[in-house]
Length: 140
Image (cartoon, rainbow, N blue to C red; front, side, top):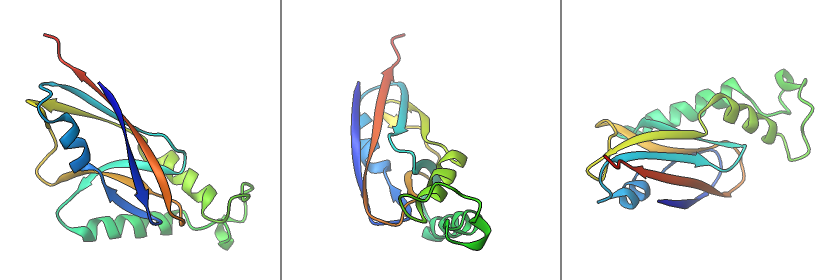
């Protein structure tokens, strides 16, 4: 079983994806869900879903860790054709997961109590991001 999810982003940040994915696998039995973000400047994360400060802090950390290409510390970067946020977005996507594997039991994602699935947008401008999903049901 396969599908894709489209997520509209409004700039850098974490965008929840758990509900869409949970709805899609609901009632599908046991198996393994694989998610892949089909872009090179965004990531997928399983992260805390109870306190929004966690998402704010993660965004601030990665913005500090990998500043825009026009920051003096990033003067060595050569890829600048798409703006000062583009190459840093590629760096962040290289550091963070672009795919996730999540067990499903009884049609329910086997996430922990405080875990949620997020698309992590690394670009400043709004984008429409596609996440490919594949569910492999247990045959045993």
